[in-house]
Amino acid sequence: MNNLTFLKIQTLELRSLLESAGDDPIAVPQLRERLADAEKELQAAQLQTGNLFPRDVHELPRAALFLRGGGVQGSEGIRPGLAGEALIQYEKMFIEQALHDEREAARNAGRQRRPRGASTPGLLFMGTPRGSFGLEFVPQTTEDGSLLEVHARSLGNVAAALVRVAGSDTESLEEAIAPIPARVLQPLMQFLKTLAQYGAELRLAFHDRPGQSLSVSQIQKAAERLERDMTQEMVNLSGTFRGVTRESGSFDLRTDAGEVIMGTAADHLTEDDLERIDGLTNRPCKAQLQKTTVRSISGASSSTFVLLDAE
Image (cartoon, rainbow, N blue to C red):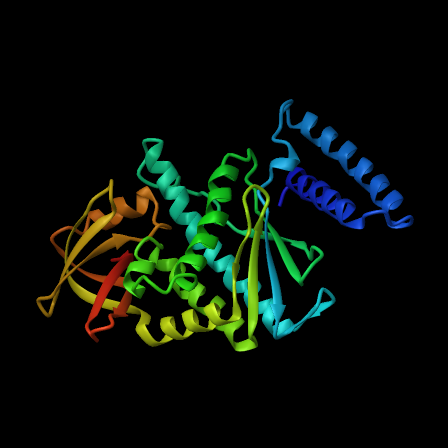
């Protein structure tokens, strides 16, 4: 993280702490002094970069997970296993969703893929807001802040995925997961499974939209349904590669066993990767795929594939 990004995050965190301090006669003066110093450093750093009109730190997208119930003791503390695994799986969901959203943004801008050398998106843990025990995040920013809006949408899309899978009893699992990027599903399942194991309920809060909640019962039912009716595995197949489209990322592979496998290229693959893979068209290859299988109420199963790489 560069110094400018660090100062933005520090200033945002101090503002959050000041808001939480209320009328505390000791903490408030100290936080105000620290905030004033941080704002001066931030202003000086922004002038050094030549960016006279930088993005306001207030606009950094934020999200918080508030947990209550099993594994949580009010607003005082949380079991390390619950907090640690929730943090890990939530960030994994965000990374895969952000990669997908960055690819969509690139395509809308006239490119097919994320630029070569683009950094992997991630989250920065900001602290623990008051209330039921909370874990607060902001996306890890790029130098020019160009992806903040994309990553703000990603935070919302992760929440929407959780609510879609756990908050509805009317949709089939296949319908519920259809809009969710396939690479988001494994950490989503692990996230809900962890909360279910501890008997925790979840409230999602954001900087720019109403919060959303999932009860213990909803989380447990969703975790059970995912574990029972969905499997994901990495498979390596040999066959003849029959091409990949740049616009949609769709690919076609005829295996040595004569089966035709179709699906989409993974969001992390760059334009250079697709160029290399497309060079395998009509040639024997070994493909690494992520296979997602969903079992319907009738007992029938359907599978989808994501191309991770081919050589």
